[in-house]
Length: 173
Image (tube, rainbow, N blue to C red):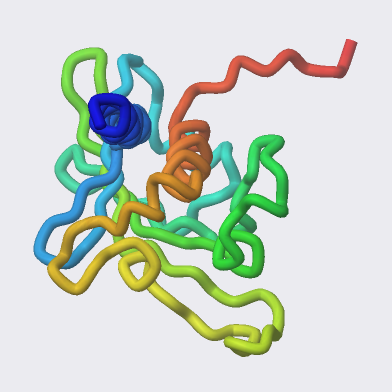
């Protein structure tokens, strides 16, 4: 009996730690937000423009907003077999707001939408579904599967990379 209780506690703690590590996501009033703070003096309009992944980039009173152009979800080397189907069969888009403060900036993304890029037995090409449909329970809290299936980690890594300055060396000698 003690062993069973111990194993249950270990599983709960491990699940909590795994969730905390990718918990740049939070839910509020039935909506999902992703938020991360970066330390940098980067020109953020140029950063967004240079990625080629954003459109409608606007800087209004120091708050930069943009719409992410729909793109495939980057799996970052993960197996397709272990990845949820909605990440594999859809393109993703979201709305982004960036606020700046001395040497730092905070990115907030919301209005995540998946656009079906193939016909399946459950959906048609072009059909749109919000991330909330896949990730939230009816009471507005996260479904454990969102964190346990690597969905949160995959999306977190993809979004984090979009807003990090890339110091790429030119191939042009």
